[in-house]
Length: 395
Image (cartoon, rainbow, N blue to C red; front, side, top):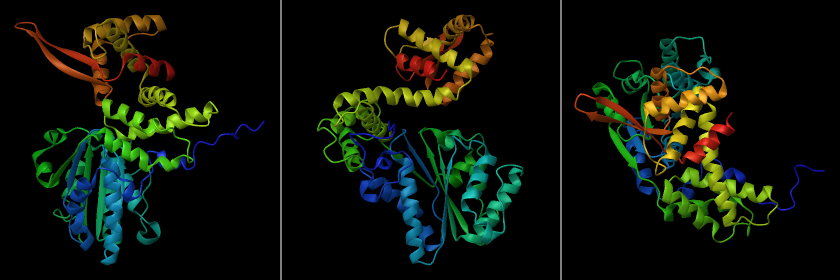
Protein backbone atom coordinates (compact mmCIF):
# COMPACT_ATOMS: atom_id res chain seq x y z
CA UNK A 1 0.00 0.00 0.00
CA UNK A 2 1.26 3.46 -0.92
CA UNK A 3 0.78 5.53 2.25
CA UNK A 4 1.93 8.71 0.47
CA UNK A 5 -0.35 8.34 -2.52
CA UNK A 6 -3.60 10.27 -2.86
CA UNK A 7 -6.27 9.73 -5.45
CA UNK A 8 -7.60 13.27 -5.05
CA UNK A 9 -4.91 15.91 -5.01
CA UNK A 10 -6.00 19.07 -3.22
CA UNK A 11 -2.85 21.22 -3.12
CA UNK A 12 -0.85 22.45 -6.09
CA UNK A 13 1.65 24.60 -4.13
CA UNK A 14 1.06 24.32 -0.40
CA UNK A 15 4.04 26.58 0.32
CA UNK A 16 1.86 29.60 -0.52
CA UNK A 17 -0.13 28.86 2.65
CA UNK A 18 2.85 28.66 5.02
CA UNK A 19 3.40 31.48 7.53
CA UNK A 20 7.07 31.63 6.54
CA UNK A 21 6.22 32.31 2.88
CA UNK A 22 7.07 35.85 1.76
CA UNK A 23 4.69 36.71 -1.10
CA UNK A 24 5.32 38.99 -4.07
CA UNK A 25 4.19 42.58 -3.76
CA UNK A 26 0.98 42.00 -5.70
CA UNK A 27 -0.06 39.40 -3.12
CA UNK A 28 0.22 41.86 -0.21
CA UNK A 29 -3.33 43.12 0.15
CA UNK A 30 -4.64 46.19 1.95
CA UNK A 31 -1.26 47.44 3.19
CA UNK A 32 -0.30 49.96 0.50
CA UNK A 33 -0.24 52.90 2.93
CA UNK A 34 1.75 50.95 5.51
CA UNK A 35 4.31 49.87 2.89
CA UNK A 36 4.62 53.47 1.70
CA UNK A 37 5.21 54.69 5.26
CA UNK A 38 7.87 52.05 5.91
CA UNK A 39 9.56 52.81 2.59
CA UNK A 40 9.68 56.54 3.37
CA UNK A 41 11.17 55.84 6.80
CA UNK A 42 14.05 53.70 5.53
CA UNK A 43 14.48 55.39 2.14
CA UNK A 44 17.69 57.22 3.21
CA UNK A 45 19.36 53.80 3.55
CA UNK A 46 19.06 53.22 -0.20
CA UNK A 47 21.44 56.15 -0.69
CA UNK A 48 23.81 55.05 2.06
CA UNK A 49 22.44 57.45 4.66
CA UNK A 50 21.07 56.71 8.14
CA UNK A 51 17.44 55.53 7.98
CA UNK A 52 14.79 56.50 10.49
CA UNK A 53 14.24 54.05 13.31
CA UNK A 54 10.70 52.70 13.29
CA UNK A 55 8.28 51.17 15.78
CA UNK A 56 5.40 49.23 14.23
CA UNK A 57 2.37 48.31 16.33
CA UNK A 58 -0.66 46.13 15.71
CA UNK A 59 -2.38 42.90 16.63
CA UNK A 60 -1.00 39.54 15.53
CA UNK A 61 -1.63 38.76 11.86
CA UNK A 62 -1.99 42.35 10.62
CA UNK A 63 0.99 42.16 8.25
CA UNK A 64 3.65 43.90 10.36
CA UNK A 65 6.38 41.29 9.88
CA UNK A 66 5.37 40.58 6.29
CA UNK A 67 5.56 44.25 5.27
CA UNK A 68 8.82 44.83 7.16
CA UNK A 69 10.51 41.88 5.44
CA UNK A 70 9.14 42.82 2.03
CA UNK A 71 10.12 46.49 2.19
CA UNK A 72 13.65 45.77 3.46
CA UNK A 73 14.17 43.26 0.65
CA UNK A 74 13.05 45.90 -1.85
CA UNK A 75 15.40 48.42 -0.19
CA UNK A 76 18.33 46.04 -0.82
CA UNK A 77 17.46 45.92 -4.53
CA UNK A 78 17.02 49.69 -4.85
CA UNK A 79 20.28 50.34 -2.98
CA UNK A 80 22.20 48.12 -5.40
CA UNK A 81 21.21 50.50 -8.20
CA UNK A 82 22.93 53.27 -6.20
CA UNK A 83 26.00 51.12 -5.52
CA UNK A 84 25.02 50.95 -1.85
CA UNK A 85 25.18 47.76 0.20
CA UNK A 86 22.38 47.07 2.70
CA UNK A 87 22.35 44.11 5.08
CA UNK A 88 19.15 42.93 6.77
CA UNK A 89 18.83 40.79 9.91
CA UNK A 90 15.47 39.51 11.15
CA UNK A 91 15.43 38.65 14.88
CA UNK A 92 12.45 36.85 16.40
CA UNK A 93 12.58 38.14 19.99
CA UNK A 94 10.11 35.50 21.13
CA UNK A 95 12.79 32.89 20.37
CA UNK A 96 15.86 35.08 20.89
CA UNK A 97 14.56 36.69 24.06
CA UNK A 98 17.81 37.79 25.74
CA UNK A 99 20.06 40.64 24.65
CA UNK A 100 22.92 38.22 24.01
CA UNK A 101 20.79 35.88 21.87
CA UNK A 102 19.41 38.76 19.81
CA UNK A 103 22.85 40.27 19.11
CA UNK A 104 24.27 36.83 18.30
CA UNK A 105 21.42 36.16 15.86
CA UNK A 106 21.85 39.52 14.09
CA UNK A 107 25.62 39.03 13.82
CA UNK A 108 25.24 35.50 12.48
CA UNK A 109 22.81 36.61 9.75
CA UNK A 110 24.90 39.58 8.65
CA UNK A 111 28.23 37.78 8.69
CA UNK A 112 30.24 36.18 5.91
CA UNK A 113 33.27 34.53 7.50
CA UNK A 114 35.22 34.49 4.25
CA UNK A 115 34.87 38.25 3.95
CA UNK A 116 35.21 39.35 7.58
CA UNK A 117 37.34 36.55 9.08
CA UNK A 118 35.01 36.78 12.09
CA UNK A 119 33.09 33.88 13.60
CA UNK A 120 29.79 34.13 15.48
CA UNK A 121 29.48 31.04 17.69
CA UNK A 122 26.05 30.16 19.10
CA UNK A 123 27.40 30.49 22.64
CA UNK A 124 30.58 31.01 24.63
CA UNK A 125 31.10 34.76 24.18
CA UNK A 126 30.17 37.67 26.41
CA UNK A 127 27.46 40.08 25.28
CA UNK A 128 30.08 42.80 24.85
CA UNK A 129 32.14 40.55 22.54
CA UNK A 130 29.09 39.70 20.41
CA UNK A 131 28.49 43.44 20.03
CA UNK A 132 32.14 44.07 19.12
CA UNK A 133 31.97 41.43 16.40
CA UNK A 134 28.62 42.73 15.13
CA UNK A 135 30.02 46.26 14.74
CA UNK A 136 33.06 44.90 12.90
CA UNK A 137 30.87 42.87 10.52
CA UNK A 138 28.60 45.81 9.73
CA UNK A 139 31.52 48.21 9.20
CA UNK A 140 33.32 45.67 6.99
CA UNK A 141 30.45 44.46 4.81
CA UNK A 142 27.75 47.11 4.55
CA UNK A 143 26.99 50.77 4.09
CA UNK A 144 23.78 50.30 6.09
CA UNK A 145 22.44 47.50 8.30
CA UNK A 146 18.69 47.21 8.91
CA UNK A 147 17.80 45.10 11.94
CA UNK A 148 14.21 43.95 12.39
CA UNK A 149 13.32 43.09 16.00
CA UNK A 150 10.03 41.20 15.77
CA UNK A 151 7.96 40.98 18.97
CA UNK A 152 10.46 43.37 20.52
CA UNK A 153 8.30 43.60 23.65
CA UNK A 154 9.29 40.01 24.45
CA UNK A 155 12.98 40.83 24.83
CA UNK A 156 14.14 40.73 28.44
CA UNK A 157 16.39 43.80 28.33
CA UNK A 158 15.98 47.10 26.47
CA UNK A 159 19.76 47.66 26.30
CA UNK A 160 19.89 46.30 22.76
CA UNK A 161 17.63 49.15 21.63
CA UNK A 162 19.97 51.68 23.18
CA UNK A 163 23.05 50.03 21.67
CA UNK A 164 21.61 49.79 18.14
CA UNK A 165 19.97 53.21 18.04
CA UNK A 166 23.16 54.95 19.25
CA UNK A 167 25.81 52.82 17.55
CA UNK A 168 26.95 55.64 15.24
CA UNK A 169 26.65 58.41 17.83
CA UNK A 170 28.76 56.42 20.33
CA UNK A 171 31.44 55.67 17.73
CA UNK A 172 30.83 51.92 17.61
CA UNK A 173 30.26 52.18 13.85
CA UNK A 174 32.63 54.38 11.85
CA UNK A 175 32.27 53.22 8.21
CA UNK A 176 28.54 52.43 8.11
CA UNK A 177 25.24 53.09 9.84
CA UNK A 178 22.31 51.12 11.23
CA UNK A 179 18.53 51.36 11.40
CA UNK A 180 16.06 49.49 13.62
CA UNK A 181 12.53 48.33 12.86
CA UNK A 182 10.86 47.27 16.10
CA UNK A 183 7.62 45.29 15.82
CA UNK A 184 5.23 44.88 18.75
CA UNK A 185 1.72 43.55 19.33
CA UNK A 186 1.34 45.96 22.25
CA UNK A 187 0.34 49.50 21.32
CA UNK A 188 1.55 50.83 24.69
CA UNK A 189 4.97 49.17 24.42
CA UNK A 190 6.73 52.52 23.99
CA UNK A 191 5.45 53.67 27.39
CA UNK A 192 7.65 51.06 29.08
CA UNK A 193 10.85 52.30 27.45
CA UNK A 194 13.54 54.44 29.02
CA UNK A 195 13.25 58.09 27.97
CA UNK A 196 16.69 58.00 26.30
CA UNK A 197 15.62 55.02 24.17
CA UNK A 198 12.37 56.74 23.22
CA UNK A 199 14.21 59.80 21.97
CA UNK A 200 16.58 57.84 19.73
CA UNK A 201 14.43 54.89 18.69
CA UNK A 202 10.89 56.17 18.23
CA UNK A 203 11.53 58.40 15.22
CA UNK A 204 8.61 56.98 13.25
CA UNK A 205 5.64 55.03 14.63
CA UNK A 206 2.99 53.24 12.61
CA UNK A 207 -0.09 51.29 13.69
CA UNK A 208 -1.37 48.39 11.57
CA UNK A 209 -5.13 47.98 12.00
CA UNK A 210 -6.79 44.54 11.80
CA UNK A 211 -7.92 43.37 8.36
CA UNK A 212 -11.63 43.52 7.59
CA UNK A 213 -13.56 40.68 5.93
CA UNK A 214 -13.11 42.11 2.43
CA UNK A 215 -9.33 42.40 2.81
CA UNK A 216 -9.00 38.90 4.27
CA UNK A 217 -11.10 37.55 1.40
CA UNK A 218 -8.76 39.20 -1.11
CA UNK A 219 -5.68 37.87 0.74
CA UNK A 220 -7.06 34.34 0.60
CA UNK A 221 -8.01 34.68 -3.07
CA UNK A 222 -4.49 35.89 -3.86
CA UNK A 223 -3.21 32.59 -2.45
CA UNK A 224 -5.94 30.33 -3.83
CA UNK A 225 -3.54 29.03 -6.49
CA UNK A 226 -2.05 26.98 -3.67
CA UNK A 227 -4.92 24.62 -4.58
CA UNK A 228 -5.65 22.81 -7.81
CA UNK A 229 -8.23 24.51 -10.00
CA UNK A 230 -11.83 23.76 -9.06
CA UNK A 231 -10.94 22.26 -5.67
CA UNK A 232 -12.23 25.15 -3.53
CA UNK A 233 -16.02 25.35 -3.33
CA UNK A 234 -17.42 28.85 -3.84
CA UNK A 235 -18.37 29.43 -0.21
CA UNK A 236 -15.03 28.40 1.32
CA UNK A 237 -13.05 31.65 1.07
CA UNK A 238 -15.98 33.89 2.15
CA UNK A 239 -16.58 31.55 5.10
CA UNK A 240 -12.94 31.67 6.24
CA UNK A 241 -12.83 35.45 5.80
CA UNK A 242 -16.03 35.95 7.80
CA UNK A 243 -14.76 33.78 10.66
CA UNK A 244 -11.40 35.54 10.79
CA UNK A 245 -12.81 39.08 10.55
CA UNK A 246 -15.46 38.41 13.18
CA UNK A 247 -13.01 37.02 15.72
CA UNK A 248 -9.62 38.66 15.24
CA UNK A 249 -8.89 40.20 11.82
CA UNK A 250 -5.80 37.99 11.77
CA UNK A 251 -4.71 37.13 8.21
CA UNK A 252 -2.17 34.62 9.48
CA UNK A 253 -4.86 32.61 11.26
CA UNK A 254 -7.13 32.89 8.22
CA UNK A 255 -4.42 31.41 6.01
CA UNK A 256 -3.87 28.63 8.56
CA UNK A 257 -7.58 27.82 8.57
CA UNK A 258 -7.62 27.61 4.76
CA UNK A 259 -4.59 25.29 4.80
CA UNK A 260 -6.12 23.11 7.52
CA UNK A 261 -9.37 22.92 5.52
CA UNK A 262 -7.40 21.58 2.54
CA UNK A 263 -5.64 19.05 4.76
CA UNK A 264 -8.97 17.87 6.18
CA UNK A 265 -10.29 17.38 2.64
CA UNK A 266 -7.18 15.33 1.82
CA UNK A 267 -7.45 13.24 4.96
CA UNK A 268 -11.06 12.40 4.15
CA UNK A 269 -10.33 11.71 0.45
CA UNK A 270 -12.71 14.47 -0.66
CA UNK A 271 -12.59 15.87 -4.16
CA UNK A 272 -13.28 19.43 -3.01
CA UNK A 273 -12.73 21.64 0.04
CA UNK A 274 -16.14 22.37 1.58
CA UNK A 275 -17.51 24.80 4.17
CA UNK A 276 -17.77 21.84 6.53
CA UNK A 277 -14.00 21.41 6.15
CA UNK A 278 -13.62 25.08 7.10
CA UNK A 279 -15.63 24.65 10.31
CA UNK A 280 -13.48 21.67 11.31
CA UNK A 281 -10.33 23.59 10.36
CA UNK A 282 -11.37 26.57 12.48
CA UNK A 283 -11.54 24.35 15.55
CA UNK A 284 -8.22 22.73 14.66
CA UNK A 285 -6.50 26.10 14.22
CA UNK A 286 -7.54 27.32 17.65
CA UNK A 287 -6.47 24.10 19.34
CA UNK A 288 -3.23 23.90 17.33
CA UNK A 289 -2.18 27.46 18.20
CA UNK A 290 -2.91 27.05 21.89
CA UNK A 291 -1.43 23.56 22.04
CA UNK A 292 1.83 24.92 20.64
CA UNK A 293 1.96 27.62 23.33
CA UNK A 294 0.78 25.36 26.13
CA UNK A 295 3.06 22.47 25.16
CA UNK A 296 6.03 24.70 25.98
CA UNK A 297 4.63 25.53 29.42
CA UNK A 298 5.56 23.70 32.65
CA UNK A 299 3.10 21.11 33.97
CA UNK A 300 1.89 23.40 36.77
CA UNK A 301 1.14 26.17 34.28
CA UNK A 302 -1.09 23.70 32.43
CA UNK A 303 -2.89 22.85 35.66
CA UNK A 304 -3.41 26.56 36.38
CA UNK A 305 -4.89 27.03 32.90
CA UNK A 306 -7.12 23.99 33.30
CA UNK A 307 -8.35 25.37 36.64
CA UNK A 308 -9.13 28.72 35.01
CA UNK A 309 -10.99 27.04 32.15
CA UNK A 310 -13.09 24.88 34.48
CA UNK A 311 -13.96 27.87 36.67
CA UNK A 312 -14.88 29.95 33.63
CA UNK A 313 -17.23 27.22 32.42
CA UNK A 314 -19.02 27.30 35.78
CA UNK A 315 -19.70 31.02 35.43
CA UNK A 316 -21.83 32.91 32.93
CA UNK A 317 -20.04 33.74 29.70
CA UNK A 318 -16.75 32.52 28.26
CA UNK A 319 -15.00 35.73 29.32
CA UNK A 320 -16.15 35.64 32.97
CA UNK A 321 -13.35 36.72 35.34
CA UNK A 322 -11.96 34.46 38.07
CA UNK A 323 -9.90 35.61 41.01
CA UNK A 324 -6.41 34.33 41.73
CA UNK A 325 -7.60 32.74 44.98
CA UNK A 326 -10.35 30.86 43.13
CA UNK A 327 -7.80 29.60 40.62
CA UNK A 328 -5.43 28.56 43.38
CA UNK A 329 -8.08 26.56 45.30
CA UNK A 330 -9.09 24.53 42.23
CA UNK A 331 -5.46 24.20 41.08
CA UNK A 332 -4.62 22.48 44.40
CA UNK A 333 -7.47 20.00 43.88
CA UNK A 334 -6.20 19.25 40.36
CA UNK A 335 -2.74 18.62 41.80
CA UNK A 336 -4.28 16.14 44.27
CA UNK A 337 -6.09 14.49 41.35
CA UNK A 338 -2.79 14.03 39.49
CA UNK A 339 -0.85 13.05 42.60
CA UNK A 340 1.55 16.01 42.41
CA UNK A 341 2.60 18.53 45.04
CA UNK A 342 1.13 21.97 44.60
CA UNK A 343 3.13 25.19 44.44
CA UNK A 344 2.82 28.15 46.78
CA UNK A 345 0.27 30.89 46.04
CA UNK A 346 3.06 33.36 45.26
CA UNK A 347 4.38 31.09 42.50
CA UNK A 348 0.89 30.70 41.04
CA UNK A 349 0.66 34.50 40.83
CA UNK A 350 3.94 34.44 38.88
CA UNK A 351 2.58 31.75 36.54
CA UNK A 352 -0.55 33.80 35.87
CA UNK A 353 1.63 36.81 35.02
CA UNK A 354 3.65 34.64 32.63
CA UNK A 355 0.43 33.42 30.96
CA UNK A 356 -0.64 37.04 30.46
CA UNK A 357 2.77 37.76 28.92
CA UNK A 358 2.07 34.95 26.43
CA UNK A 359 -1.35 36.52 25.65
CA UNK A 360 -3.21 33.41 26.84
CA UNK A 361 -5.04 35.31 29.61
CA UNK A 362 -5.83 38.91 30.51
CA UNK A 363 -5.34 40.30 34.02
CA UNK A 364 -6.87 43.36 35.67
CA UNK A 365 -6.25 44.59 39.21
CA UNK A 366 -9.44 45.51 41.11
CA UNK A 367 -10.03 47.47 44.29
CA UNK A 368 -11.93 45.41 46.87
CA UNK A 369 -13.04 48.43 48.87
CA UNK A 370 -11.80 50.61 51.67
CA UNK A 371 -9.58 48.66 54.04
CA UNK A 372 -9.80 45.49 51.92
CA UNK A 373 -6.94 46.10 49.49
CA UNK A 374 -6.69 44.94 45.87
CA UNK A 375 -7.24 41.66 44.10
CA UNK A 376 -6.53 40.34 40.59
CA UNK A 377 -9.18 39.32 38.07
CA UNK A 378 -8.06 36.80 35.43
CA UNK A 379 -9.83 36.18 32.12
CA UNK A 380 -9.23 33.56 29.44
CA UNK A 381 -8.78 35.06 26.00
CA UNK A 382 -9.90 31.86 24.26
CA UNK A 383 -12.87 29.54 24.68
CA UNK A 384 -12.43 27.41 27.85
CA UNK A 385 -13.24 24.22 25.91
CA UNK A 386 -10.41 25.00 23.50
CA UNK A 387 -8.05 25.63 26.44
CA UNK A 388 -8.96 22.30 28.06
CA UNK A 389 -8.51 20.45 24.76
CA UNK A 390 -5.12 22.11 24.25
CA UNK A 391 -4.02 21.19 27.78
CA UNK A 392 -5.03 17.57 27.25
CA UNK A 393 -3.45 17.41 23.80
CA UNK A 394 -0.09 18.69 25.12
CA UNK A 395 0.12 16.17 27.97
